Amino acid sequence: MWRLARCASSNLSRSLRRRCFYTAAIPGPCIVHKRGTDILHDPWFNKDTGFPLTERDRLGLRGLLPPRVISFEHQYDRFMESYRSLEKNTQGQPHGSVSLAKWRILNRLHDRNETLYYRVLIDNIKDFAPIIYTPTVGLVCQNYSGLFRRPRGMYFSAKDKGEMMSMIYNWPAHQVDMIVLTDGSRILGLGDLGVQGIGIPIGKLDIYVAAAGINPQRILPVMLDVGTNNQKLLEDPLYLGLRQPRLEGEEYLSIVDEFMEAVHTRWPKAIVQFEDFQMKWAFETLQRYRKRFCMFNDDIQGTAGVALAGLLGTVRAQGQPLSDFVNQKIVVVGAGSAGLGVLNMAIEALSRMSGNNEMAVKNKCYLLDKDGLITKERKNIDPAAAPFAKDLKDVEGLREGASPIEVVKKLKPHVLLGLSGVGGIFNEEVLKAMRESDSTKPAIFAMSNPTMNAECTAADAFKYAGPNIVFGSGSPFEDVDLGNGKVGHVNQANNMYLFPGIGLGTLLSGAHIITDGMLQAAAECLASYMTDEEIQKGILYPSIDSIRDITAEVGAAVLRAAVEEDLAEGHGDVGPRELKHMSKPETVAYVSRNMWFPVYSPLVHEK
Ligand SMILES: NC(=O)C1=CN([C@@H]2O[C@H](COP(=O)(O)OP(=O)(O)OC[C@H]3O[C@@H](n4cnc5c(N)ncnc54)[C@H](O)[C@@H]3O)[C@@H](O)[C@H]2O)C=CC1
Ligand SMILES: CC(=O)C(=O)O
Ligand SMILES: [Mg+2]
Image 1: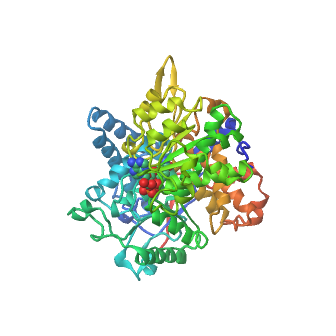
Image 2: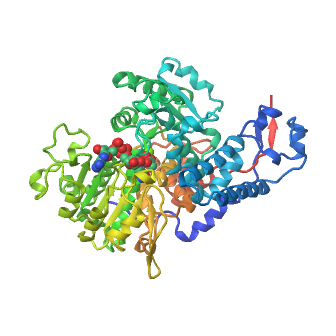
């Protein structure tokens, strides 16, 4: 049975805990094996003008910096001032070029001084997430070859076959905890961007640092460049990746195999998040590695948990008991890795609630892809979508391949959820048809990214489907003014609410695999996080501002699930027995305590 107990700590303590994150203890010293300009050029250690005079002496920096020492707070203010003046000076300019200018100024800081970068990112996550993550990261990937100045992360290409085991030792960090890996084959809703997709692992790992406090010295963004089928890129003289069609079949898998072996030989406990792989490889690699390595697929598994939390929140917003979830008619548009991941998890939850009658609950879920409603009449049906194909006799009045408008008009669904990557597919007609939904508070989730690929905008959803809807989108939109002092709340239904906690909880548990139970615990935690009062207002997820709070809760839930499944081997000095004896609140506190927070540590030189 689905549990919806409140998370270990109540809302009351949220602000209290937030304060704890920001009053980090005095940092211990940090050993550095460099001196002089080498330190100034290393963003992990660089403090710019912030090096105290004694440290300048110790590290051979005297004379290499202007004499005045500027405090961290002052440096922070100076950066924020320059960011705000950029905002002011670019007012009225095209949105894309302003976003890229903002990304550039943040990226320059990232390349120069990581401590300051992550501090401004954490403190201003709501403003900066749309720049370093969706939607701007999409634009960055599209323009990556032209924007490229310095490499970040590692690049393994098809030309490196046989070399990866030694290449992995080129990475300068002794320990890596979290890897985000892509092959660039389905970047957001933008398709195959080849090597340019590296922007996604970089953005996701920035969210890991900001939301989960993973130490940035222990993260590794990785691009597996196996070619691209994007003709425009292949013909682009600036393109930085392999100029060859994508490897397929065994050739492709042998590259991924070699990479996974190399990573786990050097860092056996590193967690690998697979991100933005085209569907066939997303499912295949998940099945291939999930029992052998500590890995998960964010698009399939992270997205599913966030969507499920949103679906359960919708039931609560309707004033119904959770058991009413089994009565919801759910239409999912998009039968790819994300859409299928969502349906699989939703059906699992539904069948648990209704006593395992999987067939009955499946009957209430409808799936559409680019060819419309998927039915048993479909020729060459994708095996992953086949279990959701409808018998035509069960969808009277509908045909194989029925369009979204036909389906919505006929079924009057409670939930319309888009993971198609097709911008505007929930058009005026479809949204107006949702007014006839069997629910008084229907839900519309336009989850595709980036913004231009969203199935509809928030404004259109409230305008055409009416003010009573619950709305979620993958990329952020402003809340909608509904007049008379009413606000249409926009939820960012994005896997960023879960993947940081899945990674951190798994890391601290020391589990060597990530199970369905751990993922389910993450989803349950998110689903139970909001109060009834918030849910009544249509607020399904916490504000991005408090992303560290929700990540601590999700991380703790994942860790406890690992303990319950006897998978927790411990992390650092904390062994499995200690983890087992932690209460729920103690686990949350333990997870919070283990979040890295950016402050300048005294640097000590060692040869
Ligand atoms: N909000 C979030 O947290 C997440 C959002 N996404 C977004 O979901 C989208 C899809 O991702 P994946 O499932 O991995 O991609 P995918 O390429 O595996 O699947 C796309 C699916 O959409 C279908 N489709 C294409 N055109 C369509 C049309 N005109 N009508 C109906 N269906 C159509 C395709 O047939 C396919 O089934 C992307 O835009 C991605 O950014 C993905 C993961 C997480
Ligand atoms: C959010 C995400 O993972 C995606 O759009 O692919
Ligand atoms: Mg993704």
